[in-house]
Image (cartoon, rainbow, N blue to C red; front, side):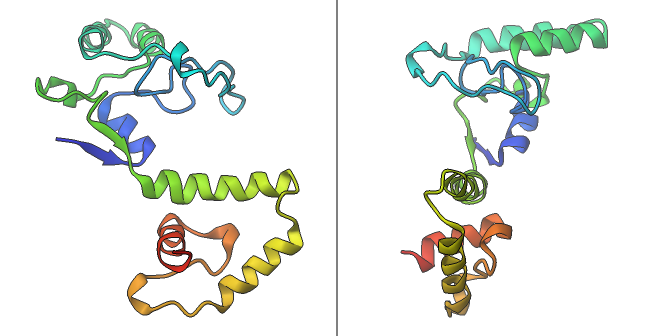
Length: 170
């Protein structure tokens, strides 16, 4: 069995904390210090990131599950970067290895939009160039079998980015 959904759903189903947590990764114990909205996501030396492992995780999950008060549970969840989920009761399921991020949400919505925003901020992409791209997007007559493509780059949804990237630009 494999879990494939967007990041918030993966975290909720598999018992990991959200991306705003200090221990926000479902694969390792890399810490992301800072308050919500001001997290530091730097430090990309992968060799410095201690991997999560199933045995330790199951032990920590049982510690969290056996907390006697909500305050204690909250503290333990923050300490371990996990929250109880019934899926952990399945002996054969390893949420660390068997959860993937759905590429539609990660690549096509998050990454594509973020890159355009960064390019605009760094002036790699100028507003006039974005307008030209927008004009070209508006003039594309895509085949009806590929679904909708973005008519306005800035407000495109994930499925439109997927169609644009996979079909129109291919």
